[in-house]
Image (tube, rainbow, N blue to C red; front, top):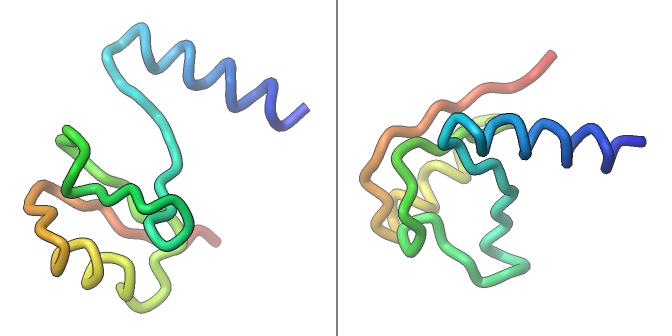
Length: 69
């Protein structure tokens, strides 16, 4: 069920020109600095370790970090 909801949300957002995908650099060797992103959401930001990592890798665009409750 979760996969179906995620797929539907991605389809709807894509129609508005928004691509939604998960990036886990430590696992996939994909770095946000290598992608053509205008905005990155750091969901589960904790203390900001991920932002420090991707800034160090060269990502210079806007980042929105938050810890969901």
